[in-house]
Image (cartoon, rainbow, N blue to C red):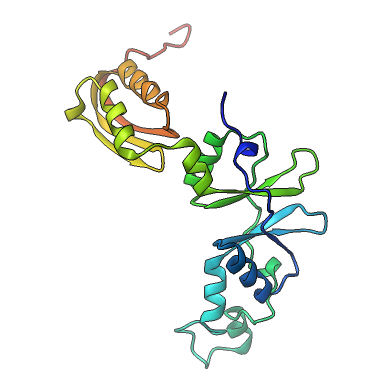
Length: 218
């Protein structure tokens, strides 16, 4: 049976309200040792995310380097992030979320695609936040050491030395060449079925297309 988010999620909802000031956001990140905090509305529904980089930009200066002081005041204010800036003004929206029933493999793929290390878990009915899914827990659940994956992948390749394999957090990228398109498709599916593989990105080329379908009447 596939592992679901509910099996590994953290029960602590790492979140702040939309009107939370910078100090509260920074404290939440420090307390839970995270690089992002979910922003929720009055109904505890995720509306965005504030990332650590957002705070770093704020702390750097109220005026960004290279912005001349001779610039009109209104334009200079566009570059400013005062200390009383609230979460709603800093957040990236909308928030990317998963539910307790989401397959962990799908969550891992989502994290890899978005480069997000934690995702709020929401109640599928109410949409309210109920926990947090951390990348470290996802990786422990679905991935295996790259050396093991590489060995298993090599075992299903017709000529391992003619292919190039790259593995990043369970996502496999393969390049090489085969004679038939059907061989390229079958190879991708064989790799996808290997335990610990989150997804397969295939750059395998082929010489002949034996899967070409001709529309009726042609």
